[in-house]
Length: 116
Length: 111
Image (cartoon, rainbow over all chains, first blue to last red; front, side):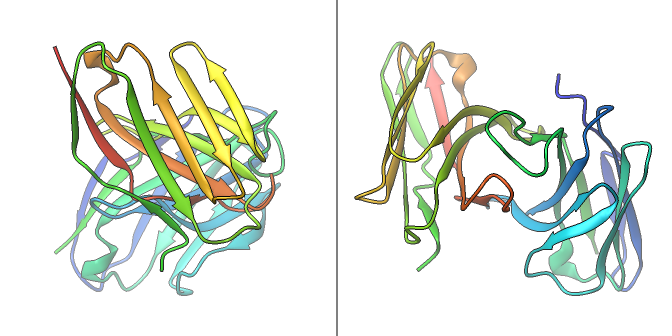
């Protein structure tokens, strides 16, 4: 049990809408990362937060945004949804500053987003 | 050329077989190498984490890193039906940089 929970598990949205996905990390996990996993692909890095500040971003447009809260929860927001945004969105957290050997990232089970 | 290449399979083996899973990569700056297992409708679960070149063993699993060839492997001994899953390789430049994943290899172990 990794202690990373995500909600909702499934979501269906229409193109152009906005969506908020939520993640709850273990107490003491200061780093949270979000990844997008399209069907049949490996996860792709969206962004990372450390102590409520964004400290890394992948090749995703600004309509992907996030927040990390002091209670170890975080959000991923996506505006102006496109069909290609359909994917499994994974949240991962660690107690260190990133993904070190002593404090590796642990993933939640993801939110499956379908955009129609 | 993608940064990390991984044969997607599917790979089907009989129970008890030795399984070999592999990834190649193009950027020699990668220093940290991981293998994740992902069951259907679940998130990736960390199996092995190695730094730089060498071997690491954990139970039935052995991870190998050959930085000179830019090649990493995961061996599973005495494979079990419960090992049926998608195996993802991942790597990063440091402990603070994002993970770069392969596509994953889907493995089926047949009883």
